[in-house]
Image 1 (spheres, rainbow, N blue to C red):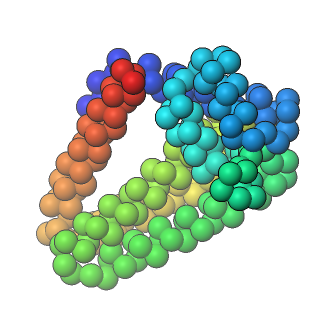
Image 2: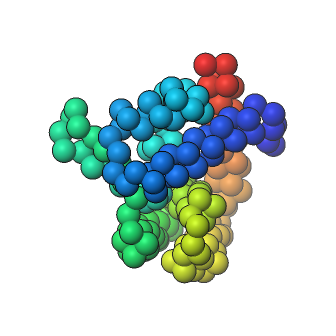
Length: 202
Protein backbone atom coordinates (compact mmCIF):
# COMPACT_ATOMS: atom_id res chain seq x y z
CA UNK A 1 0.00 0.00 0.00
CA UNK A 2 2.93 2.34 0.67
CA UNK A 3 5.13 3.30 -2.28
CA UNK A 4 8.33 4.41 -0.71
CA UNK A 5 10.83 6.54 -2.58
CA UNK A 6 9.73 10.17 -2.42
CA UNK A 7 8.02 9.81 0.96
CA UNK A 8 11.15 8.41 2.55
CA UNK A 9 13.31 11.27 1.26
CA UNK A 10 10.87 13.89 2.51
CA UNK A 11 10.47 12.27 5.93
CA UNK A 12 14.26 12.03 6.27
CA UNK A 13 14.61 15.74 5.55
CA UNK A 14 11.82 16.54 8.00
CA UNK A 15 13.44 14.43 10.71
CA UNK A 16 16.75 16.18 10.13
CA UNK A 17 15.04 19.58 10.37
CA UNK A 18 13.40 18.56 13.66
CA UNK A 19 16.68 17.31 15.07
CA UNK A 20 18.47 20.56 14.12
CA UNK A 21 15.67 22.65 15.66
CA UNK A 22 15.82 20.69 18.92
CA UNK A 23 19.63 20.85 19.09
CA UNK A 24 19.62 24.59 18.42
CA UNK A 25 17.02 25.20 21.14
CA UNK A 26 18.98 22.97 23.54
CA UNK A 27 22.01 25.20 22.98
CA UNK A 28 20.40 28.65 22.84
CA UNK A 29 17.29 28.06 25.01
CA UNK A 30 14.56 30.43 23.77
CA UNK A 31 14.92 31.55 20.15
CA UNK A 32 12.77 33.79 17.98
CA UNK A 33 11.08 32.08 15.03
CA UNK A 34 12.81 34.31 12.47
CA UNK A 35 16.26 33.52 13.87
CA UNK A 36 15.47 29.81 14.05
CA UNK A 37 14.28 29.80 10.44
CA UNK A 38 17.41 31.64 9.31
CA UNK A 39 19.64 29.09 11.02
CA UNK A 40 17.81 25.99 9.75
CA UNK A 41 16.83 27.12 6.24
CA UNK A 42 19.44 29.74 5.27
CA UNK A 43 22.58 28.98 7.27
CA UNK A 44 22.43 25.18 7.29
CA UNK A 45 20.17 24.70 4.25
CA UNK A 46 18.38 21.77 5.89
CA UNK A 47 14.96 22.31 4.33
CA UNK A 48 12.60 24.77 2.67
CA UNK A 49 10.72 27.38 4.68
CA UNK A 50 7.45 25.48 4.21
CA UNK A 51 8.89 22.23 5.59
CA UNK A 52 10.51 24.19 8.46
CA UNK A 53 7.19 25.63 9.63
CA UNK A 54 5.48 22.25 9.25
CA UNK A 55 8.18 20.70 11.46
CA UNK A 56 7.79 23.48 14.02
CA UNK A 57 4.05 22.85 14.15
CA UNK A 58 4.55 19.10 14.62
CA UNK A 59 7.12 19.63 17.38
CA UNK A 60 4.75 21.99 19.21
CA UNK A 61 1.86 19.54 18.81
CA UNK A 62 3.97 16.70 20.23
CA UNK A 63 4.94 18.94 23.22
CA UNK A 64 8.68 18.69 22.44
CA UNK A 65 8.88 22.47 22.15
CA UNK A 66 6.71 25.34 23.38
CA UNK A 67 5.55 28.30 21.32
CA UNK A 68 5.72 31.67 23.09
CA UNK A 69 3.65 34.20 21.15
CA UNK A 70 3.91 37.61 22.83
CA UNK A 71 2.29 39.26 19.83
CA UNK A 72 1.94 38.52 16.12
CA UNK A 73 5.41 39.82 15.25
CA UNK A 74 7.21 38.39 18.27
CA UNK A 75 7.06 34.59 18.34
CA UNK A 76 9.73 32.43 19.94
CA UNK A 77 10.22 28.76 20.81
CA UNK A 78 11.88 26.94 23.69
CA UNK A 79 12.30 23.46 25.12
CA UNK A 80 10.26 22.61 28.23
CA UNK A 81 11.90 21.03 31.25
CA UNK A 82 11.62 17.24 31.44
CA UNK A 83 8.99 17.37 34.19
CA UNK A 84 6.97 19.95 32.27
CA UNK A 85 7.23 17.88 29.09
CA UNK A 86 5.96 14.74 30.85
CA UNK A 87 3.10 16.67 32.46
CA UNK A 88 2.05 18.15 29.12
CA UNK A 89 2.19 14.76 27.38
CA UNK A 90 0.19 13.15 30.19
CA UNK A 91 -2.48 15.88 30.06
CA UNK A 92 -2.73 15.55 26.28
CA UNK A 93 -2.93 11.75 26.49
CA UNK A 94 -5.71 11.89 29.08
CA UNK A 95 -7.69 14.40 27.03
CA UNK A 96 -7.28 12.53 23.73
CA UNK A 97 -8.16 9.17 25.27
CA UNK A 98 -11.29 10.56 26.97
CA UNK A 99 -12.41 12.24 23.73
CA UNK A 100 -11.85 9.05 21.73
CA UNK A 101 -13.83 6.92 24.19
CA UNK A 102 -16.67 9.45 24.13
CA UNK A 103 -16.74 9.35 20.31
CA UNK A 104 -16.73 5.54 20.28
CA UNK A 105 -19.55 5.36 22.81
CA UNK A 106 -21.59 7.68 20.62
CA UNK A 107 -20.76 5.59 17.53
CA UNK A 108 -22.15 2.55 19.30
CA UNK A 109 -25.43 4.29 20.09
CA UNK A 110 -26.41 5.66 16.66
CA UNK A 111 -28.05 3.67 13.87
CA UNK A 112 -27.32 5.91 10.89
CA UNK A 113 -24.53 4.42 8.77
CA UNK A 114 -23.34 7.89 7.77
CA UNK A 115 -23.03 9.04 11.38
CA UNK A 116 -21.35 5.79 12.38
CA UNK A 117 -18.75 6.25 9.66
CA UNK A 118 -17.99 9.86 10.67
CA UNK A 119 -17.64 8.90 14.33
CA UNK A 120 -15.46 5.85 13.72
CA UNK A 121 -13.32 7.90 11.34
CA UNK A 122 -12.85 10.60 14.02
CA UNK A 123 -11.94 8.00 16.65
CA UNK A 124 -9.51 6.26 14.30
CA UNK A 125 -7.85 9.58 13.44
CA UNK A 126 -7.48 10.39 17.14
CA UNK A 127 -5.77 7.06 17.83
CA UNK A 128 -3.42 7.43 14.83
CA UNK A 129 -2.54 11.03 15.75
CA UNK A 130 -1.83 10.04 19.34
CA UNK A 131 0.39 7.16 18.24
CA UNK A 132 2.28 9.26 15.66
CA UNK A 133 2.91 12.13 18.09
CA UNK A 134 4.16 9.83 20.83
CA UNK A 135 6.41 7.87 18.47
CA UNK A 136 7.92 11.17 17.31
CA UNK A 137 8.55 12.13 20.93
CA UNK A 138 10.07 8.74 21.68
CA UNK A 139 12.46 9.02 18.71
CA UNK A 140 13.54 12.61 19.36
CA UNK A 141 13.81 12.67 23.15
CA UNK A 142 17.17 11.82 24.69
CA UNK A 143 15.52 10.39 27.80
CA UNK A 144 12.98 7.59 28.10
CA UNK A 145 9.53 8.91 28.97
CA UNK A 146 7.48 6.67 31.25
CA UNK A 147 4.34 8.47 30.11
CA UNK A 148 5.05 7.77 26.44
CA UNK A 149 5.95 4.12 27.04
CA UNK A 150 2.83 3.59 29.15
CA UNK A 151 0.62 5.18 26.50
CA UNK A 152 2.15 3.20 23.63
CA UNK A 153 2.02 -0.11 25.49
CA UNK A 154 -1.26 0.26 27.39
CA UNK A 155 -3.49 3.23 26.52
CA UNK A 156 -3.41 2.91 22.72
CA UNK A 157 -3.95 -0.89 22.69
CA UNK A 158 -6.91 -0.35 25.06
CA UNK A 159 -8.39 2.25 22.70
CA UNK A 160 -7.92 -0.09 19.73
CA UNK A 161 -9.73 -2.84 21.66
CA UNK A 162 -12.65 -0.51 22.43
CA UNK A 163 -12.69 0.51 18.74
CA UNK A 164 -12.88 -3.15 17.69
CA UNK A 165 -15.60 -3.96 20.23
CA UNK A 166 -17.79 -1.02 19.16
CA UNK A 167 -17.30 -1.88 15.49
CA UNK A 168 -18.25 -5.51 16.17
CA UNK A 169 -21.55 -4.35 17.69
CA UNK A 170 -22.53 -2.53 14.51
CA UNK A 171 -23.80 -5.82 13.13
CA UNK A 172 -24.57 -5.72 9.42
CA UNK A 173 -22.93 -2.28 9.11
CA UNK A 174 -19.54 -3.59 10.28
CA UNK A 175 -18.11 -4.64 6.91
CA UNK A 176 -19.46 -1.57 5.13
CA UNK A 177 -17.84 0.64 7.77
CA UNK A 178 -14.54 -1.23 7.55
CA UNK A 179 -14.48 -0.97 3.76
CA UNK A 180 -15.27 2.75 3.91
CA UNK A 181 -12.61 3.39 6.55
CA UNK A 182 -9.98 1.51 4.52
CA UNK A 183 -10.91 3.38 1.34
CA UNK A 184 -10.79 6.71 3.18
CA UNK A 185 -7.38 5.90 4.68
CA UNK A 186 -5.99 4.92 1.26
CA UNK A 187 -7.25 8.23 -0.12
CA UNK A 188 -5.54 10.09 2.74
CA UNK A 189 -2.27 8.24 2.11
CA UNK A 190 -2.51 9.10 -1.58
CA UNK A 191 -2.99 12.80 -0.77
CA UNK A 192 -0.07 12.66 1.67
CA UNK A 193 2.15 11.04 -0.97
CA UNK A 194 1.26 13.71 -3.55
CA UNK A 195 2.01 16.47 -1.03
CA UNK A 196 5.39 14.92 -0.24
CA UNK A 197 6.21 14.62 -3.94
CA UNK A 198 5.32 18.27 -4.39
CA UNK A 199 7.54 19.27 -1.46
CA UNK A 200 10.47 17.24 -2.77
CA UNK A 201 10.27 19.25 -5.98
CA UNK A 202 9.57 22.52 -4.15
